[in-house]
Structure formats: structure tokens, C-alpha cells
Amino acid sequence: MRIRRGRKNIVVPTNAMSDVAFLLLIFIMLLALINYRREVKIEYPEAESAKKTSAEKNLEIWIDSAGGLYLDGVPAELGRIEDALIDVYHRSPDTRVHVIADRDTPFRHIRGVLDILQLIQYRVVSFVVKDA
Image (tube, rainbow, N blue to C red):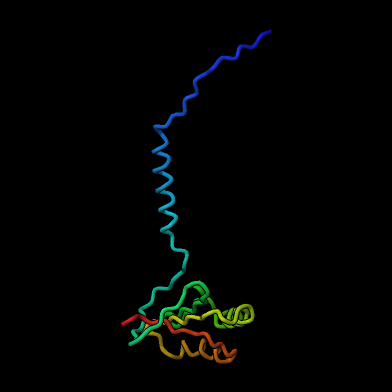
């Protein structure tokens, strides 16, 4: 039995390539728009001067006007925040802690977090405010 091998013209359709590239571009743009940082909606207090810090090595403690505590955007109790601060301090003492409180938050709600920071002698702390 003899097999004939003929030369076939293989054609790759290129008219759909632009559609695929366009859909891929839309997909990449949508992924780039996703904000992975969890934030609590608060009104920032204003400051006369501010210093910008890098956003990579931060631990954020949010305090809303009702006294609710959030650790990196997740609701947390004061004990959990204390455990997280001690853990971060032992792993990487140069990690900056951002205390972000609403403008209308009474100081008694902020004081619990400040007492913990003072107790463990955390030195790298920032109070986040809106630039005036």
C-alpha cells in the first residue's frame, strides 16, 4: 500500500487575530483597574504639613467615627490588633504603622491603639491626614 504525500497549503486565518488581541487588551485593562487595597470610608483630618511614605511595607489601622477598628481594611478587635502589631514588630521592626482615623473620631477610640503602640514601644508610626 502506497501512501501519497502531497503538499498541502496550510492557511492560518488572521482575520480573527485582531479580535483576540482586542479582547486580551480589554482583559488586561480590567485587571489593572482592580484595587486590591481594602479601605474604610472616612473623612481625613487636615494637616499643615505632611510627609509622604512608601506604600509597600505598611500596616494600616483604620478607626471610623463610631470607634470601629479595622486592620488593613478588615474589622478587628483591639486584642487582634495588638497581636498583629507584636507579630509585625518581631518579624520586621521597620514596618511602618499607619493610624488612619476619621475626622469625627473621639480621641478615646484612638487612645486604645496608641496605648498598645506605646506599650510595645513601636517607633515607626504615622498618623494619616489629608494634605491641606
